[in-house]
Amino acid sequence: MSKLKEKGITIINADPKVAGKDFHTIYESEDADMVICKTFDQLKSLRSSSGKSLGYFKKVLSNADVDEIERASQAGAEFVIVDASDWKIIPLENIIAKLHKSKTKVFTTAKSSREVATMFAVLELGVDGVILSTDSEDEVDKARQQLSTARFPIKPAKIVEIKDVGTGERVCVDTASMMGMGEGMLVGSRSNFMLLVHNESVGSSFTSPRPFRVNAGAVYCYTIAPDGKTRYLSEIESGSEVWVVNKEGSARRAVVGRSKIETRPLRLIRAEIEGETGTVILQNAETIRLITKDGKLLSVTEIKVGDEVLGYAKPASGRHFGMEVDEYIVEK
Ligand SMILES: O=C(O)C(=O)C[C@@H](O)[C@H](O)[C@H](O)COP(=O)(O)O
Image 1 (cartoon, rainbow, N blue to C red):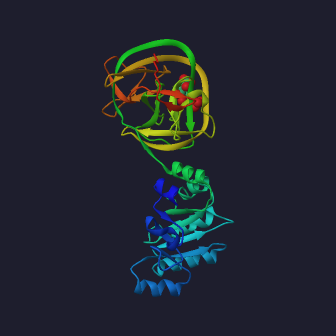
Image 2 (cartoon, protein in one colour):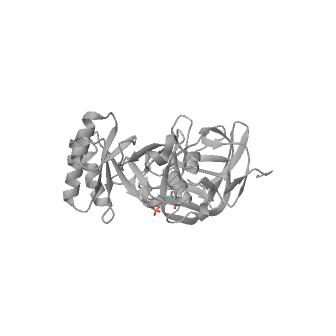
Image 3 (cartoon, rainbow, N blue to C red):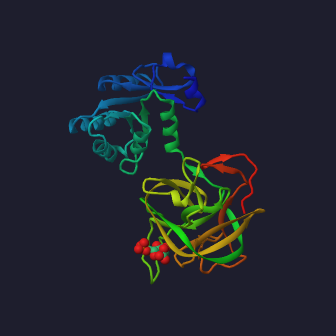
């Protein structure tokens, strides 16, 4: 319990007598903050007598159980807990579709952190909450990490040098998500200095859009992954996770479907953000674009010294196998 508290967990599925005052509880007891009712009669009688949040638990084995959940919502359940152990996704999709415009929240159960992440993505809307049953502290941490988002302080980066550097291998990161205008990946030669490289959702008379792709940069470049570690672009492969970052700095996770490493002409771009200087080496082609400080796309073939594009910088620190280390480091 004390470890859960340290981790910032505020609500648990436990008897209030055991949970004490440190947590909100969701439990089959009228003393709980969120009371799980076992029958419609209990739901109805508590509705008129208690000011508590009341819900209904149902093991879902058939469509009749799905209908019963809908009736619980109509009977005033503020939440339903859908416990589906056999077919999990399709029944939940049906329940979310039926209830997402009602006032009833849909919760479900999970046995692993991976399952938690899946449940929050079912039918795009996802469930409103997941009760994770685990005896592993690590799984609690991983579940929280799966759900975390990030925000990077995006700032204007002034271009100070552009140099064609011959050929090398660059990496196209093809994600399993569609990216929109203003979204891309942070890429740089140093973990603490990156430019926001735009995705390829914009086509041209010579190219079709590839809205799932960021032509991210040369193989040695870093990007930051959702686990907080840096990744060399050359290490990214099918199944890796990357941050897709928008021009305001909000990041969302995307899974990589494929990365393509091919030999292409490269262009080094050196830029400066509030006294920090850094570089990135990108493919030299019209389809690779950065974002100007007023949100316009700027191809690396058109970029000039003095232009300002979006990037991210923080004071230098070392990285060892991707993990941040406070050590003396000079990267040029
Ligand atoms: O080959 C190139 O030149 C490029 O890498 C430009 C890419 O940015 C572009 O996405 C590519 O040409 C599209 O080709 P595709 O066959 O991978 O769709």
